[in-house]
Image 1 (tube, rainbow, N blue to C red):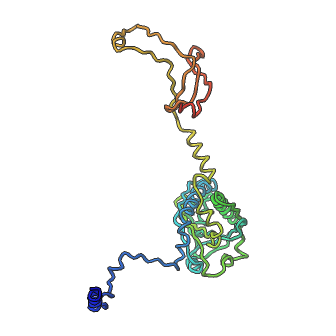
Image 2: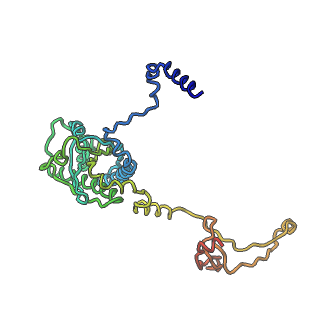
Image 3: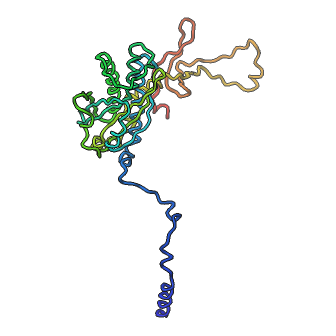
Length: 321
């Protein structure tokens, strides 16, 4: 029996057309997702949520800094965080843009800020009382010392805000560098080095321009774990203080029951105008805030007005009891 069964199995295998079984159509691979490990974007995917939180906060703080500097309502919108090779990014800087380098002394790496030159011209015009709609000439001109000082004030405010948001995670001290003596390209090893670009849109007095903060990816590697463990609510004391201050301004209702008189339904129906209901006012009552018992108070009178004198707080254990 075993021999006959094995022969039948071999015979069935021999009859199979294996060439036809190897042919597969494109529909067989429809559910397969392609993942390119050579794509640099995958390296920041795990850090991207935290970076977005940081740079959204940076956009909010920069908005207030611009208002204090130019006395005009400003809108700073965070765009995206992307990664690419430095050589690819260098090809994109041919348009009219200004690059300003900085050094993070605590982590020992360099980055730079890229600002549209038309935006710089408009901000300078606003600072000196203009409308900001000055047209930029096609030929780049040398800025005057006064204009350079104003530009440095804007850069100082931007870098200070950048330092503040990063210091919620790690020590992050920034110092502006002189790009006239050291070009930005000298801060990177080669064109294949990976960089992280954070893009923002700045709009002030109907003038809109682009701003980018560029950091080398190698600077993120040593602090990757801290970026992963970053918690927006527990590690940002300013956010917690602001939230607490706003909560303290919320209005609440305070109430206290001074007396309770048990009456039957018949007694209530028999009440007439002018009847007097006798009630004993207790010496101490419970004060409820938003319906929650929080305080003990004694009943007293001040200037012929009934009042409550706070005696003590009610602890959580007393509430549960």
